[in-house]
Amino acid sequence: MRFCSSCGQPVAKMIPKGDERERFVCLGCATIHYVNPKIVVGALCVHEDRILLCRRAIEPRVGFWTLPAGFMELGETAEEGAVREAMEEANAKIAIDGLLAIYSIKRIDQVQIFYHARLLDPAVSPGVESQAVMLVGFDAIPWDELAFPSVEWALRRAIELRQQARAG
Amino acid sequence: MRFCSSCGQPVAKMIPKGDERERFVCLGCATIHYVNPKIVVGALCVHEDRILLCRRAIEPRVGFWTLPAGFMELGETAEEGAVREAMEEANAKIAIDGLLAIYSIKRIDQVQIFYHARLLDPAVSPGVESQAVMLVGFDAIPWDELAFPSVEWALRRAIELRQQARAG
Image (spheres, rainbow over the protein chains, first blue to last red):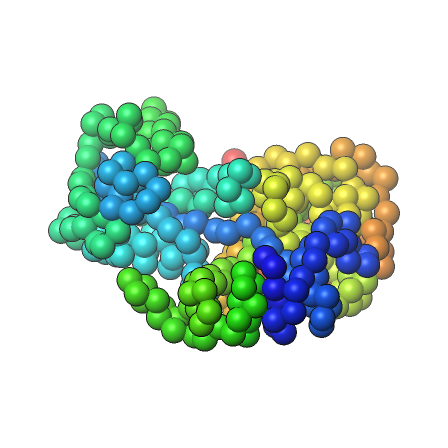
């Protein structure tokens, strides 16, 4: 950040009065510009014991497999964002069943929220951000070709919960 | 947003190529400025069956009671943010026990994440953003003087979970 988005004058990093952290403050109008972590919302979508995975068509990690997920937008709930992403990335119509996991990833200042979801229709197909989509059994997950650590964590967590549910 | 924070030139709302939503796009350098929901992190902090509440010293809702909570900052996890807020608002040293609830509040574009926490020391005192702090029994919550709906939801959810735990 170099300029004030309110008035166009230069900003400088300084600690505002009453604050304890450096913020971008406008040297013209004194507006304080806060920068905060972003939210990624996604879903583990299941149909008849198979999971929906999408092969990424965009950077980063083109060609690797991911759960449908993306940045939460203004004007939606986290659940609505996860439903939207499944539609955008896999033309998948889903229903959210509940929270799967939340991961804070400090290095990239993201909080990633993953939900359990059901595919309402097994007819899925790649959206513009996907090269391919597939429904894969829990025993056939391409562990070495996953796009991001959080995708692996969410899948392992889902398997763990599934085993616990089966155990009792 | 009226000016580009990268180059200082005016921005205009338009739908970028490949996107489906209006974004602020710089008319000079073409940078797309995404605006996303913000994350609030807070904790329901318990000590010997009493809950920590803070009476707000700042707008909005000055004088009303809240759970310690605030905007998540860069460079921290959601849990670390909740621990920091308890210290800032009530000089309270806490340990996070697990997730209590997540609320998406579309009207203000916030996702609020509340944790269960234990007070590690019952000696609490108001921080600069609090007029007062108190440890209150579950049966003495000032329901009519709570600052925000999400504070009430989180408290009611905690009571519900507590009753379920006692029932079985």
